[in-house]
Image 1 (cartoon, rainbow, N blue to C red):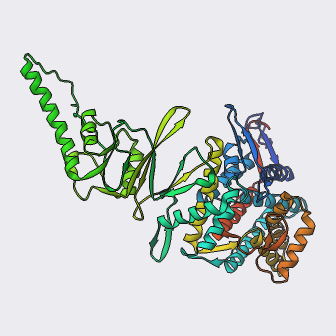
Image 2 (image 1 turned 60 degrees about the vertical axis):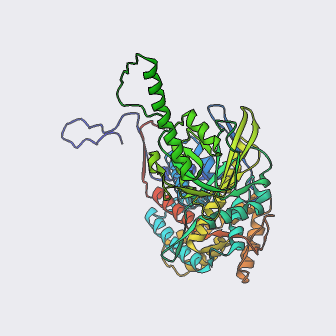
Image 3 (image 1 turned 90 degrees about the horizontal axis):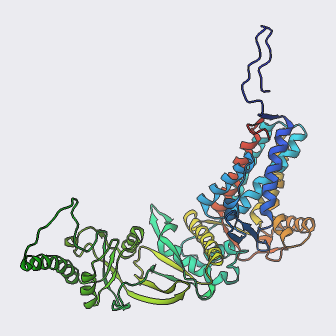
Length: 533
């Protein structure tokens, strides 16, 4: 395969690739891709569902992490196999689009590849298999769309169930009910109506790690939290409300662009020079004081003399903030970023309801935490995540982030599906009936697709320690008997799920993305490796 065959002309064959390059064709290609895909799926199966276990990740730099979040695990893996890399891209696509459902997406894609391997070895053509999968996927979308339940912004109970379901099996599951209420409140706060639909920008919900207390102490702040020490002890630490001004320029003597020398020969000249500087700084301070602002946020430095004058007038000053932090304050309070003190007017000022500065002990000494409450009109909302710091706190944030994205997607799409594998087993049973109407070989692929759908409930059963076959047969029977909300409960047994809902868009995107990835791999007829492996 590395040379063109001799055409009888007497010319030597032409090498088109390196001698070390290996080319795999035929059934061996299928085995290679299927084996990698199945291995990748098996890696994540044990973490799926409420009874899923965690993975300990030990990085090359010595850091460790314990998590069962599929997106986190996939992001940390160092993969080299092309099929495995395709699954990494699949996980990234699901995470970017929905923020949740990565593990289920990978498991389903892996099972599609397993079914493909069996059918291809029996002689089924890859394109027939691809066409069958695409047909089955179209039927699945139609089935799940018809079975979905409508949800609105005010359906608090269903939205809380969506949030709690997304947190099931994570480190925050023990306080899922408390956090679910906070997540729903945060999503509802940032939701806005556009052309008769709701848009929820999750970027307007900030996560702040407190590093102390219990996870159950987590709360939401309709405003922003800033971890920054105050520069002066006499700055006010509590304020009841008022105006806010946000600067993107320094509040000090402006430096010239070019170096210049000023020759001073007498004490009077020196005094005049200092008085001129003082007058400039006094002007800056007076403009701020006259504006009525009670808090000054500055992305640049603030001269100590200006800061003292403002503090003497009970004005809190935060200097040398990060530009992104200053922008967040402006967004939360409704203020405008201004680049000159003379630009202050009523339109550029923002509003706040209260300011509280708390001091905590940390490994680096005392640290200040500033709570800026803005109220119902806040452009941002912050979830103050309590609990221990380090990797544990990161896991808490990931669990809350998954729930937030699920709730936001549910509000935007307006539809939810029953969880616990109900939607997958329902679609699988209807697709099997649909396959009976297909006379061609595509029927085999459609039946394989249905079996792959059943791997979601069977994985939930297996991770709980129950018998997969018995429980799956019982689940099929209950669905056939008309129990529409029957699925796998937290004990891993089939039963009625009264209030377990998942975002329909998350499930549909996971199935469609997995099908596309599997079909893309099935179109491969040769694997060419420059490394020779």
